[in-house]
Image (cartoon, rainbow, N blue to C red; front, side, top):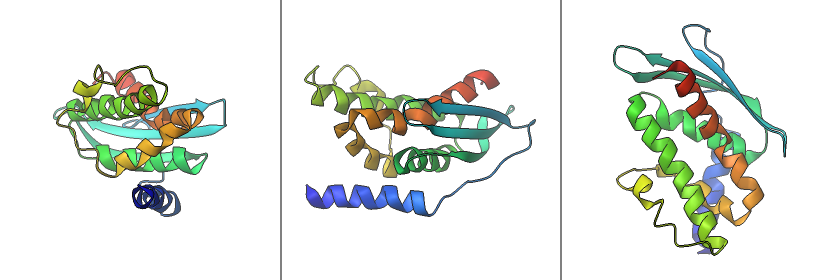
Length: 160
């Protein structure tokens, strides 16, 4: 298990040290949404462009600052959603949040997470699974989910 935790830690640090999709997009056509975690000061600024004809995320850029977990999660999220249909992106959001919630509820003895398992069915999270170790530190879950909540807000505001 220690080897797996080391691998996960290395994936998180790689994304933190070698940021992808950093920058800004012109608003409009992009939507800009800011997320903030007042508990620790993490900040996410998300720029997202969605093609209205195909309802596909055509570009994502991110800015902001925060701990390695929030920034790595933001960077991984931006890579995971770029080029994907909005319906698939919404499914990824649900799956990632379920991943965090399932592990958190197991740790807190609140069940086995089976009520959330349906959101994970058939979804490939790839590197994002590295963040599941965060649930051992409940205060850090908000760090990992900040970008995903901001993304959901952006899609809702864009009405796609």
